[in-house]
Length: 347
Image 1 (cartoon, rainbow, N blue to C red):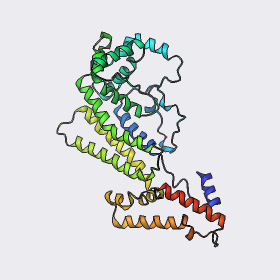
Image 2 (image 1 turned 60 degrees about the vertical axis):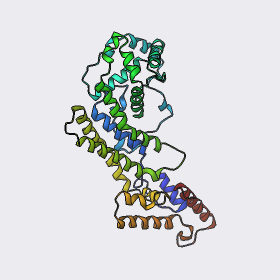
Image 3 (image 1 turned 90 degrees about the vertical axis):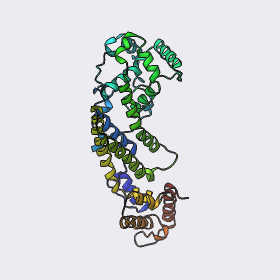
Image 4 (image 1 turned 30 degrees about the horizontal axis):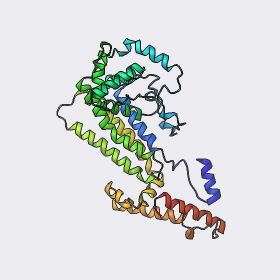
């Protein structure tokens, strides 16, 4: 960011403090929030397979993790010994011996074990497909959870919920699967997690799209996610009797809200959020009014945005070192202005 600041000052006479105007990756923020939720549910033992729940929180450095393109592969993608491990896993009945505590940890462990056990050999894959057909379901395989993206957990749970009838029949088909059988309560827990995490999955998918700029959507997405959390908290607080597993979820939601709020509060420093929102033709001041900003505050933001545009991007207002810009400089600034307008969706 220091080099970018120097380049902008040298080439375009634009003063930009990279550290003060750091725009954080919203997908990464969502990942941290969901991780806070799942970690507080203690959904899994801290193992190498699910190491993303035990990694040090990178938030302090505010460095976004970058992907090398391998994040679409499952946890066994680069393991040449996967088949041997699978065969050993197939014959290890003790790996199915899961304690029935009926909490989030047990439910997630069961689903992860089922998703793995049903797909380790061709025989089991064909067997599971036959149960899908018997249940009048599309013969889909369970999805593996993995250590790279939290969305893998969501996709695993969503697929398991769809395959519920097939999973129930499959786990009842052999005695060795008895400990993997899911109770009605445990399926309720799975459904709760899918329903609760769905808005975060939608937001996560939206901010990773590259077809159009999305900075102007940042505050809108934050508000939607806060509304989701507030609705969930209100629903839980409204229950006369709160089961223990929902008390656990209630605490985790508070942790999630705190994590999300921490990063939301940091968006008041980079003025790019204000500029992108106020200059978006579909948002402008409407969003800030809906979000509860006072008229004076909105007017201040509007004036500051207009001033920045005139001082930094409007060629007719640009004066460099007491002189009108040269033709070459004007061309550069004009190009920058055009890009700025297109970036904000204004043609």
